[in-house]
Length: 79
Image (cartoon, rainbow, N blue to C red; front, side, top):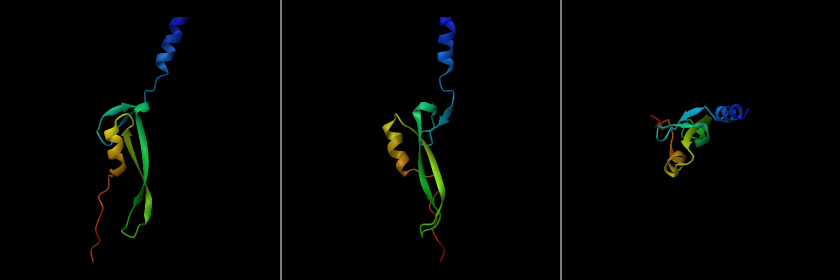
């Protein structure tokens, strides 16, 4: 009976794994957090959606870099 309980406790652990967008490490679900930022399309400030950035919540370097990170480079208008 006790062996089954130990097995079940081990089995309950999170098997979800995510890749950090900042450092690239694949981490357990408990160590990865997500910050959501508005995705700004134009220089005018039109919000076209949101951008989710995954970062390691136990690494202070990743936490700081996630605030300034974006996947999309800003574009300049041609006049």
